[in-house]
Image (tube, rainbow, N blue to C red; front, side):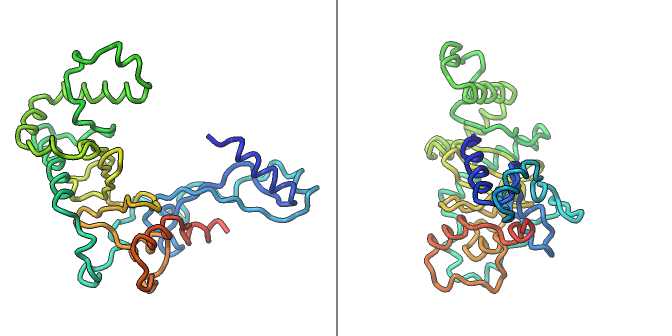
Length: 284
């Protein structure tokens, strides 16, 4: 999406005398084993490494390959990660209650988890991977073709998929709705779910994010990339968010590291804006 900007960066660095690859070096810490500084966080970042060789040589070195390839290192299997790798014992966390889920958040998860359980118990299926929009669960035949034609293709596709999901599981979904009348009072974004947790048996076994686009659930092998805003990962089995200290661990800092009394929002922001130590070291 930013081809022009990328070309400007590469051309500028070469004009300053740095030999750089025009192919981005993309790497993530979850591709590194722990002993090389890896962490269980999928955090793809572009690294641009330049070697100063003078402008003439730099402008000729147009076939320079990327520094590293995006792939596991030293035979490491990224699926071997476990989300617990970064977690501290709850008993050692000061004010641990401030990270625990509130009653409303627990209610959102419990309602959706009941659907997960019913789908598996009655049909032997996990939820599909496309975004589930409960407000759009209606028969496909009831969709307005003219309205659909006016929509962007991505939204039209999601509406059709949700309608077909409802048609395929109407009896189960209607029964689930009757069992959870409170669901209608959930915020709009909490009536949406993105199941990316593969064969996880329960939402409480996943890593979750409360996003503006819905609740996103992922398998508990590694965490989504930290961001410098409030979408802090929720560890289902702990029923709480990760702490700033645990977030720092995701960026490769040691357990001995401390933010030394800094307010949590500032710490989350710093960590979310950071670069994973192990990934940078590996590329360097």
